Image (cartoon, rainbow over all chains, first blue to last red; front, side):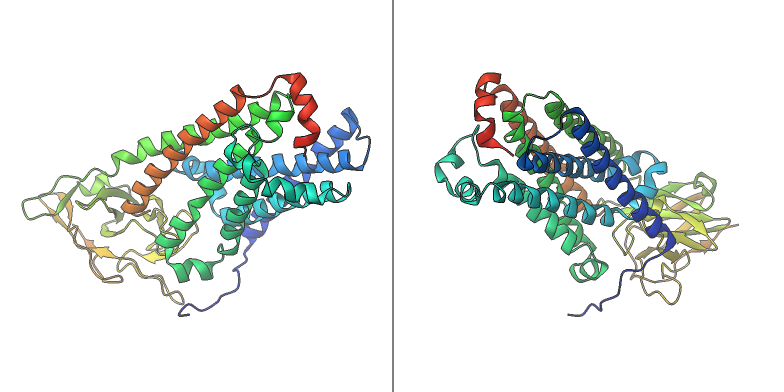
Length: 346
Length: 46
């Protein structure tokens, strides 16, 4: 393998993020169980295990809903960006919560010496042809397998080994996992338990994810339209002062890829809008001390040449820029990563 | 995200969302009545 392994790079922000996350999960599970024991104490051991199954199952569903909402929320409102910072740890924790849900389900059968019944649920082929009566646990197991795949490949080693585009494409399977979980609940507990909170939880979670994606997608569509071109094929960006100081304007090249045109005082430079780490939107970042900072995970790149400052080695594609008749223009043909291309205008 | 990635994303999730919405609605509409549900609850649990 050509990619070297690096241990997880812990910092204070990650520790705080994980601490809050774990505390929230513990608080949810504890509140759920305490309320359930107080309202309707379980009569036997299987009933007590059933409560644990529900507590961990609902927790995993809510966590998945939040994870899928973070992306569009961060696009719609920058205040949600801190949630995105360590989303991978959120996903790994969700896998462990879902794994405990599955473990308690096995325990529920085991304490009643009914493991053969569980096996029969998976192997009754005729049930796979039904809609109501479909072996819903299979859907949950498939979702758990996807979550495991996500968790196992969440480390930066796999991100570097698979490359960000492939890694991101692989991690889109989370949408499939979410769909499987919704149907796992809809064809499972929702069929036997008439508690209206179950369909309400499913419908509101699903609607929340859908509406947020629709809103963010609608906003993103406009950014894919190619901007005006000059006679020699350069993209018209606008007057220098139309680019926010220490910020960027994002323009779309004819092939649809996005270019971030930054201004740092009188310096103007154009970089690929894709961070080398996770292909995050560099153009939504800010400039500090001459370096562009990715809004997702804080990766630094010099505006002058798109290189990360030492000791880091990441490089971004750069683009030639010029100011003609008081208008900034960008050549949409990319330069090799790390090529100096920023200019100063008077 | 690259353009290809965005395009894939825009195709994938609406298809999934429609399929899940349809599946969920059918599961809700075709639910057995409460008395039958109670009888089969033990079978379907947990």
